[in-house]
Structure formats: structure tokens, C-alpha cells
Picture (tube, rainbow, N blue to C red):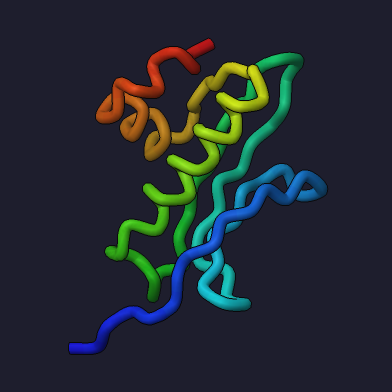
Length: 97
């Protein structure tokens, strides 16, 4: 069994309207969004097939929601993954818009 030594870094990429999770230079997970007035509509969450099962999508989703909260905006999750994540994590209920 190998141990993961790299840490996932999460950044918002405004030009592409997405949050990106990277291991080093490798893009592993994205959370795509559309900004509509004061609401961030999360449209898609995806992880590269070979990177699935490590919890990366949850890490990027959590970071995205925390960033959106800090911006004072609300969230509308049309992405099933993010909608389920928000249901499972009621600490984000205040973001529902």
C-alpha cells in the first residue's frame, strides 16, 4: 500500500468559473459554477477517474462553500454531488439561496 504524500490544494479560478483541486501540478477535481447576481450556482463537480475514492471532491466542495460564505453570497446547487454534500453537512444550510 502506498501513502499519499502530496496535499490537495484548492484554488478559485475565476476566468474558468471553477474551483480546482490539484495534487502538485495535476488537476484532479473541479467544481464548476455560474455567478448569478449574489447567488453562486454550482453546476458540476468532477474528479479524474484515476483519482476517485480519495475524498478530493468533498475537499474541494467544502473549500468552495467556505469561500462562497466568506464572499457573502448564497448557493444554489444543481450539481447532484454538491446538493447531496450540502444535505449531509447542515453547517452549510445558511448558504442556501
